[in-house]
Length: 363
Image (cartoon, rainbow, N blue to C red; front, side, top):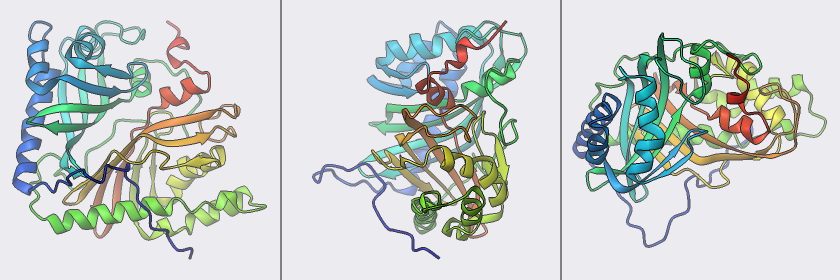
């Protein structure tokens, strides 16, 4: 089997940067604090929203958000462009957390979360007409902490899943199964209190080694066929890291897959055929953290590639350069990677190849 190359996956840092190794007790307190901050923001009314944001964020904080919200700077923009429209559209919004983890990477401290923001869709949001029914907004976040407050947030709300729940489907059919993401099979996504730093290190090493294996690309072999690539992926070095009952939870537009075969057929093979020219770590990860049996990585952007065929998402190739905002959350269970939650900003990707999903919605 092809040997997995070892290379650095994080963003290059200044040699003078002081590396932080956060202690378990501090990590636990950070998770508790940030969870309360985010709950208060989500469940604000328009009168106390600004105060709740100021309690949580530094004045000059940045948010890197999903398309079409994108980059925000300072509390005023965070309030006016992200949270005020959300609260007007979902006046009874509440937060339902599935996974909360924290840790340090390089010279930064993080808390990362998978949640659903649940509310009644009373008024239009992102130009999507309301239907006065319940919506679960899938949200995945990584918050960088400095002096007890958030200095930078990366936030992906699955806008295509929101559109789907609102009763519209403006894109091609998903290969995987669409639906609400479950929490971890272990049932401890928001309750675990990890004090085992060695376990966290093992989890991080496993997820990064698996990710490095993805740099082995049978689709670039001379004369490779669809059948050849599929067989190579099913017997790829990645196989050593995935649990036999693995679950891969993809974004709306791709859907969920079960087992390595489902993952290959519903996402990995079509993706590799469409983006043969790609660099997984053009910039590098801004976050690589592990917390007991959980780990998480992300880049902004994670991938730079050329849109070269129609297999993935079903759109004719444009040969345009595309960047991707991706997060990976992993559960390590029974010695292997059991579950992988993967938010990807699909609306942002489609926008780069000339497809505005918000303009395709018909009342």
